[in-house]
Image (cartoon, rainbow, N blue to C red):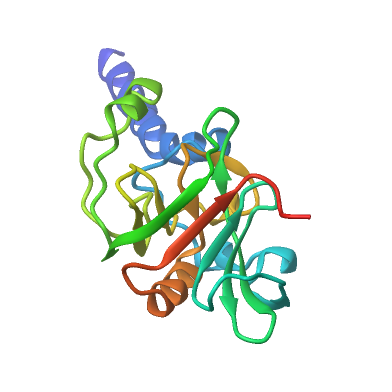
Length: 198
């Protein structure tokens, strides 16, 4: 009987260990960082309103300038002729939105991730450092914004595009951030706005 209990306990423990990551991922769809989660390719297929597209966009800014409209959940890259390339993005949740004028100061492919101390205090389960790769919350590319801790980056949670869930960074799907990365040099002007101009 003792051997039976031991085998039963081991079997239950193994089941819990194997099922826990999926259960955690399902329960944690609120956008908290999920290091190690690897998105399925189908997850990168966004609702059409968040997909990359060319739109009419009136602006006095030079082509190549990035304008982020956090309330709309879009990032625009100004193009010639009154147009812009528009990407759907995830933005900062309440209390983590900001606005300003910065430049892209650095670019990285498959960046490593070191969560700031403030983020670790809010999410103590986070690793202190994580190597770049498909399970890294920064995704495939990162473009660093000025001297801030914020970035335009990819994500391992493409279902969060179009939502306000980040700690102040702007996230795109990995295919979109790779596309943006190729278009944008270091030194690019980035304007972050809470509301569009009237």
